[in-house]
Amino acid sequence: MNNKKTAPLKPVVGALVASALDPSEMPAGTLPEFCFMGRSNAGKSSLINALVRRKIAHSSANPGKTVRIHFYRMLSWYLVDLPGFGYAKVSKQERDRFGQAVEAYLTTRQALLGGVLIQDCRRDPEPDEMMVVEWAQASNRFLVVVANKMDKLNRREQAERLARLEEVYRRPVMMLSAKTGEGLDAVRAAVVGLGLALP
Ligand SMILES: Nc1nc2c(ncn2[C@@H]2O[C@H](COP(=O)(O)OP(=O)(O)OP(=O)(O)O)[C@@H](O)[C@H]2O)c(=O)[nH]1
Ligand SMILES: [Mg+2]
Image 1 (cartoon, rainbow, N blue to C red):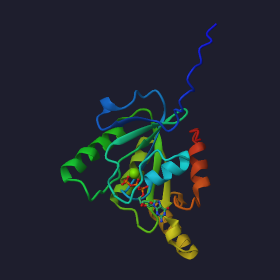
Image 2: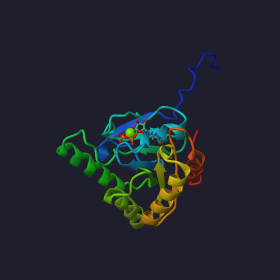
Image 3: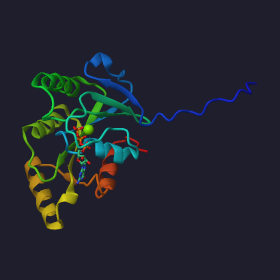
């Protein structure tokens, strides 16, 4: 019998598995993946941290922080934090480089089930957001559209913006404040409903 004390099992949930640009740097596609997309500063990292109940994704007031494709281990899937579109703070050359990497990831990654598109509820969708919707439709992937920062609006404005966004997107939109947690349970339920366990 082995009486040696074993080290406690390291928590795997939330562990950063890879920060990739090239497909060769990505984990083997043995687990399903679900990605988080949106304009820089929309609140991707804030939503991820709220869903996982841990500060795994870096969130800051400094747009363009996420400049690689980050893979985080969940219990039975990988959570993928994609670099945001439209960063001000990096060169065009660098922007093109991860733009291409993201496009290649979205179009070729077999393990990718779908994702969350997050945007600021005060803005209208721009071509980048509409392309994500087209991508989901064309490739038959799940897409949850989230309008974040609802705490910045009053109730009447929230209702107006929700109606407007659903009209433009032509699909359901979930209102959220990653800051206060309002709307978070519904986003959590949408993700868990796809069979993706959250802590
Ligand atoms: N008022 C308010 N601020 C928020 C909310 N969600 C995020 N923020 C703030 O918005 C800023 C950007 O949030 P992040 O979560 O870092 O955004 P991101 O989409 O991950 O940005 P990049 O990684 O740069 O692409 C931070 O200052 C957050 O504190 C929200 O629901 N309400
Ligand atoms: Mg981020």
